[in-house]
Length: 113
Image (cartoon, rainbow, N blue to C red; front, side):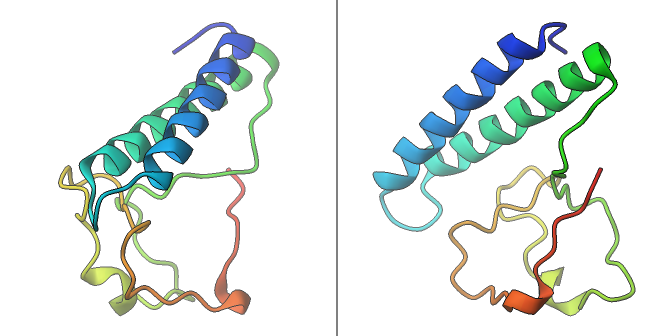
């Protein structure tokens, strides 16, 4: 993990830029460049969050869904069952290109780490 939160933040911003570029030029569903950019973005976020915590004892209000967490009591477990390994590594859910996921505005929430 990066000891310098500023350097980790710069890497995170660069990962956002790469993800935007890959997304804007994607070639079909499950474009490998988009999936790779997604993974890189998630990794850069974890690095930044860790560096921020190590340096200042603070963290972001965001969390990455890893697929290892079981559904909460309020979650509909069946809605995620078919999507738990779309990026192929078994650890993260990549739902960015899955058109059959339906999120209602009242069900979307941000978990605080």
